Amino acid sequence: MRAFLALIFLTFVMNVESSRPLMAFTPSHGWMNDPNGQFYDSKNELWHLYYQYNPNDTVWGTPLYWGHATSKDLSTWKDYGATIGPDRDEDGIFSGNIVVDHNNTSGFFNDSIDPRQRVVAIYTYNTEGSQTQHVAYSLDGGYTFEKYEHNPVLDVDNINFRDPKVFWHEPTNQWIMVIALSQQFKIQIYGSIDLTNWSLHSNFTGGLFGFQYECPGLIEVPAEGTDESKWVMFIAINPGSPLGGSSNQYFIGSFDGFEFVPDDSQARLMDYGKDFYAFQTFDNAPKESGVVGLAWASNWQYANLAPTKEWRSSMTLARQMTLASRNMNPETKVLSLLQKPIFGESVVAANKISKRNITGQDEQAVKIHKNSTGTFSFDITFSVDSSKNQTGQLQVISGQNGESIRAGFDPTAGQFFVDRGNTSGLKENPFLTDKTSAYVEPWKHQNDLPVYKMFGVIDGNLIEVFLNDGIATLTNTFFIPGTEGLEYLEIESSSDAIHIVESEVKELKLRATS
Image (cartoon, helix red, strand yellow):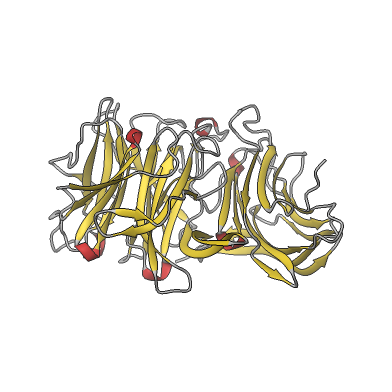
């Protein structure tokens, strides 16, 4: 039997409704999938999130709407429900995005509308036989919309032509749209000066194909510690991910307003868990926030079967994106995406325990009991001494009734993992993969020993793990029905080879903000 030097072991107990995440957005009721139309209202200092929404059921179906939610800090959300709907019940408002048309290039606004709130939605209108691109505009800052009377604005006579992402490209003074010709494996790049008349500039194809491309994105991302930036192309694939089902890949390169050229042929995965899909960024984000985005925390292999009650699916936590050069192995560094979770000012610690310099077999090194929410974060920095006895585990444990979600590290392989095999919800589903893993090089070496970092958030039925400052992430849902919430979380060590440099566990709660 193979021994794991380091293992984070998390056990949860909850009834189904109590598994609703606290900070990650969920709809009040009904079905949700892709995030759409995220933007920041700089007048009211408010983040807007739209999402694929079926208010009439907890499975995907038509009529499909855009739902709408807002947040002051990306952690506490207010849900408004359906916002943009189809003209017929058999149709759907599919994925797209929102831009702030400050200069009224579209001509939709007069001087009474603040330039910071000139909101235009660009989305795919889906019927049984067509997918075309439509626009709608808002005269009240994004709460209600008027559909453009001359829709569609783009039609290529293809039933798999969807998910536009639009942004303003200042150097060429034009709007850019990236959109998927899904089953031709093409990301088409269009340009426009007014959001209603579009010209094809180029096509991009690369990376993993799967069955089809979906939900592309293109944005300039800063490189950490420099004044430089690179363009990053995001593409979702479903089904056919190497992890199974749905996932996101990305490419780093250059963009001149007409063509995206990747720096290399490498397709990089955005997340190594099973539940991270359709990632999109927020338009008009303030400069101090950087590049901010989030994804749908589910997988089409089992999304319709998740055992929740009046609602189904959540988003991930919002993440800040930067680029950094990191070792892929001892000989090669490459530019990669760093992802860091965002905790708004409404997130506070209801309880916190920290401990440093824990060496060897120290059981119950840190233990925290549920005080209010049962939503926890853990932050551990540890080194591994392979010259010592490697038998044993480093564990973070919580819960009762014998069910558990585990996250851990095997230093002999340099592999982190999440294991949800000991959870009973969807246990018989063959696609709810028990284990997912990610390889990373050590965060650093200290006293000739490799040092690793693991930060994790357990939010309702969602676990998000960020490795070595976010160079790799693991996002997974899990379902443990029939109990009453996460009761405690503890860190234990039973290995002489493990030295916990520092550790901190928090129980998180939300406080009211102005």
